[in-house]
Structures are given as C-alpha cells and as structure tokens.
Amino acid sequence: FEDIHQDFRVVNVCNILDNLESPKQHEIAANCQRYAAKARRCNPISGCAAMILHYNCILNSVEQGIKSAINEFGTYVGPDQVSKFYDFLMPADFL
Image (cartoon, helix red, strand yellow):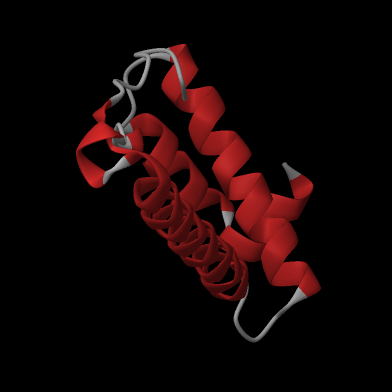
C-alpha cells in the first residue's frame, strides 16, 4: 500500500476501491495499482505505457508469425484445410 500511496495518493486509491463491488474486483484493482506504481517507479517518464508498447510489439510479432506459419502450412495442405487459430473459444476463467 505504501508504494501505491506515494504514487496515487490515498484519496484516489479509496475512490477507485469504493466504486468496486466484489472482493475479487478489489484484489484485481489493488494488484493493478501496485503494478502501475512499480512501473512508474522504474520508469518515471512513461510508466506503464512503455511496458504496454513493448508487450504490444511482442504480441504483433507473434501474430505475424502465426499468420506466416498458417500461410506456409496452407501451401502444403491447401488453404481450405488449415483451421483458424482464432476459431477456438477462450475459457471463461482464462483471466
């Protein structure tokens, strides 16, 4: 709480937590604020934004790799035989 308090102030933290309904939401919000405070402490200029951009680049690279692999696989078995990776449903408890 001390890290969060220094970066976001108690009033802001309390306002965010008061607007949430369940204990699980409180836990998630507290973890997110702690993560953001740590990121801001490590990188005071851009904070979480730098990490978000970094992970977004990694995600884009992985997506391009998947598309490339699907196209290459399609040349061997035919494009109509390649199942799409995004056709699979994400489990409700994934996050």
